[in-house]
Image 1 (tube, one colour):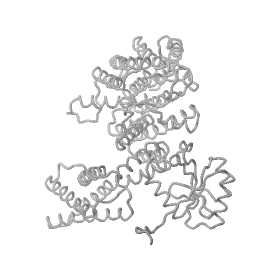
Image 2: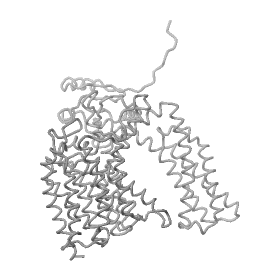
Image 3: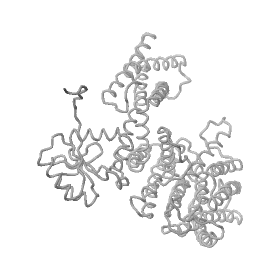
Image 4: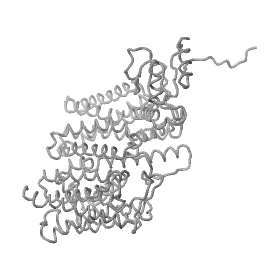
Length: 632
């Protein structure tokens, strides 16, 4: 292994790097003649035309080193390092290069590009069939082909969409190739590692001219070929560890780009649904570009392309490390990786998915207001509940029988599933689950759901005990597991609705980009009951209400509250902090949320408003008698 490392892997990587440096320099001269220039535009960050032919240099460098090594005999054909693999990759990736070339020159319709994304992996699979080990051995190879095409299309689009900043796409690809090469070496797949390192060297050579300020871009040809290569090389690097690889490989290879794709689909789908609910003309498709990608948002906050590239590459490195750990050390470290993923998800989604969460909150708000949509949501939840109850009972059976269902009495298990589903459905009907406003759920609603599902589980156990005239603890365990799974499944979407509305309010009012118009940055004076009611009102209000409002937090004269959190907003201090907020945060207003403010406080607020040129608002909630008859 070490001899091959020094005689082949390192020299081949350095050779690819040197060749890429030379070809990228050549493309700087050829790109204008080929018409491969990226002109400045509305969605562009650069201010002058820049060549976008770096991907061709990367592609040619990789093919040149591998073909030259195999042709001269310096590299010995073994495993994926073969003429068969290289021929299949060259022919299929040429489809993407041609499509990218035409798109970079004149632009291609989205569906034509998607057709090329599907055609390339199809050609590769036909020329070099692969068994992915995710389906049973007796299944037709076409199933592997379909899964492979979907996997490749996902990565092609992921790296194509993330290519929006200097050094970003190439840097993320370099992280992926380096991580997978290390995994391949750990799995004793030196040939797969050589392919990955040669591609990594080709990318690093290009990055010499792509770091900010970039002199050349990858272009669509380059970003698509890189995504396609990573998809084809990933299976060999993992070593066909299907169960672990199927779950963690996408995160390891393209965690950040795939996250960007998922957010784009979520964002654009929610935006189209909002337009449909409002009866507006639907504009912008799922495949239409926008300026809300991860790198755009981070760039708005940091203002530095280089800093954004380093942040996302660092995030990609952490995700890759967490994903590779179970592949290299086994399932015993899976728990550590899951904890890491949960922490990143909790922190990242809240801070990076603000636009998507805001759109989702608007969809929920409009679905609540429109009666027809409420009925559709209730019908969908009814079907969902039945499926969850059935799935919960089946999952409990699988766990209780240790996944050996065939060796048990199928009739008894079927009767158990039917009884549990029927009794649980009756329990949900009795608690009127589909008539409750779950978007305004209280702890009482949650506890009521626990009680009725628990009663259904105990009733199922009791009925089976009476039927078979003996107490079987396995049935009790089945009932308890079914209850836990059913409660989590039934409760999750209903709690998620209110949680998304909370996040939507946070995203709408905490987004600094919205502070340029409308109300602007404001603070709430009074971290008591009225302040809490204000947050509830903002959560339930329409998307267009209080346009441009940015809640900076609360201020309160009670020092014991300073630094504490009310919902997601912090108590910043007392009125003495207002001058600093005006200077540092551009404070435009104060919302008074105190029921009966003393006259001294009102006078103090008037003085502050005159001194700092800010607006004072009054938030009131009260009961007023409505006199229907005029007084005589």
